[in-house]
Image 1 (cartoon, one colour):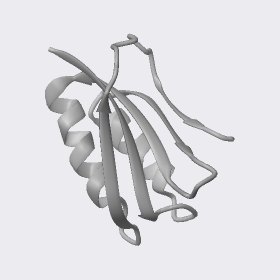
Image 2 (cartoon, helix red, strand yellow):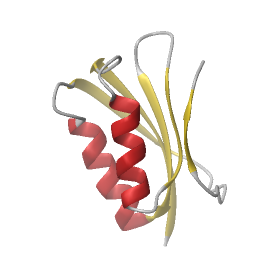
Image 3 (cartoon, one colour):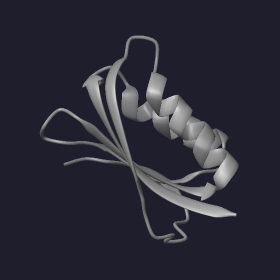
Length: 91
């Protein structure tokens, strides 16, 4: 079953390769979407793919890379868009 979600992550997560870490893992699990820094110092991640793979990515978002300090995570369901790749977006 396909699943799409949007994740907002807060904490000490910008400037430590968080976006690259998310992209690498998304490609590993064949999850499509995007990741970007927000102006309020959170990171937004849009994920879609097989439910099991998206759920793995949620767990990865909760921890982040080695030096990340994730303090809060908000998840909202989204409409499936059938994206073709995973991108790092820049504001």
